[in-house]
Amino acid sequence: MEDLKVVIGSDHAGYEYKEKIIDYLTARNISYTDIGTHTKESCDYPEIARSVCERVISGKSNRGILICGTGIGMSIAANKVRGIRAALCNDTYSARVSRAHNNANVLCLGERVIGEHLALDIVDIWLKTGFEGNRHKRRVDMIE
Ligand code: RB5
Image (cartoon, rainbow, N blue to C red):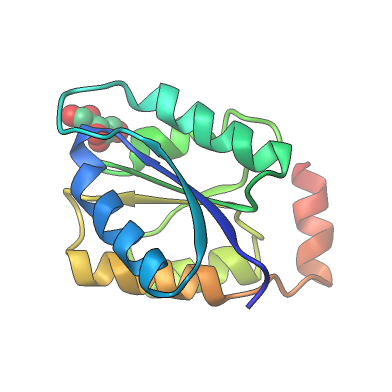
């Protein structure tokens, strides 16, 4: 596995999964930065998405994870940031291929959409899968 430096953030609707994913990262000694939110009080997901994405673009972190109720708001907001390739994944196949083919640098999850164990499997696969490059690099370069 590459040297992972994860940055993670959620709104109130993704807070519980954020804490579960942090437990997963801690158990595996994966370095992470927690952008918040830190309570279940209502907050605005675009601000969290921007903070996480700016940290990925700066190079301080090399992978971002964003969780909201559906994952949709986070993915829309994240993909507005130049250089971010955010993938909303509700299944493990999408998680794997978003890394292998799209070189996704941000993973978005919906806490109200998928179960906790599936979410953790998606995180596990997404973090472990590398970019295949070759023809996929040409296509990703076209996006950039
Ligand atoms: C919050 O209620 C909810 O709208 C938000 O977490 C997210 O699902 C938006 O896309």
